[in-house]
Image 1 (cartoon, rainbow, N blue to C red):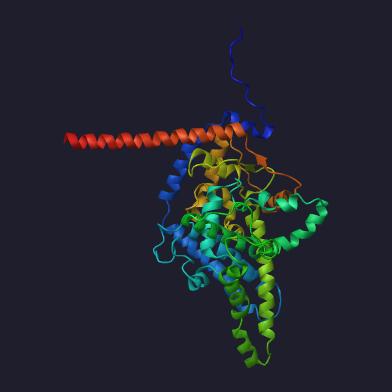
Image 2 (spheres, rainbow, N blue to C red):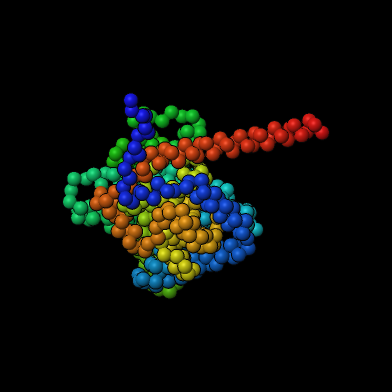
Length: 440
């Protein structure tokens, strides 16, 4: 008679062997404690840091505005590009996440429920870009952050570029398409896809049936709107008139319009205005490229993990996934962080999305140390190396890792148990309070 034995554990790839000795509970405890400590220590210094970054960003905008009519050259292009990049990645990004909700004295502006939303005027004053702020808040703050590296993550590069990855052509042919993608992605892909996520969320909230032939995880682009049957969520005209049209008209043509009068006064005719329009369009190409390098590369590469199922926010699986599916770039000085848009602290930002920029700078060495303590891979590399790895994913030269299925399931089950225990503790405590009240 044979003794019953448990089936052998599936063999792990060498790069995954760290999970065998990983203690999810201790890792979760350490990260939650650190997050609580970081939030408790936020205050006036974080607000002063925000004001400094706003000043630097506005200085770039001012330099660009004052020089954009004086010929087509590098200074206005770089300044305007950097202003647009930093206004999004630093100022809008962390404010829309609620990073300054509790600590900024001006609650009427520097608050996630106020900043850039509520109409075109607020959008123009706070964060004017191709994306509609309300749409970006849904797509990024909700869908991307809490579905990271799952199929439901709208920013999953490997899924969004599946058509290019599967294209039966030599890799060098795919490379030919990259300059166009890199310099136009914000209006071509990101603006329509964020708007799709907003409309999809509203459909679900209203209980509207989503057509059976619609794959909600598929990206919506300008190409699909014009040439592939569009989307049931909105028309191209709605997208143009509500989302990208105002930015196209105001930013590129009305914003430099005073130079028409100045040019007439100075006797140069329309030359200053034409120079400004050219500089604005060239700055748009540069800021797209800058954004691609600093943003798209945050979660792509053959050393980044993918996951099959969703997890509870701020559970053990959640904290672990933010490390395994994110990468930090070089960190340190304010100027380095400014040019990275503070996206070089991506691991820390994903673990605690509603903290300030300065908190991420403080936390980075602590998070790295805790990951080393628990044996969790913590990746920090030069942004240009990450760009190469992202391009390899886009073109199908390499693929992302899948997290070991058995361990993914195990950790999700552990999360469910811990959640049930927490609810039970609350119920017991409530019962104790009721009993005490009765006895009194």
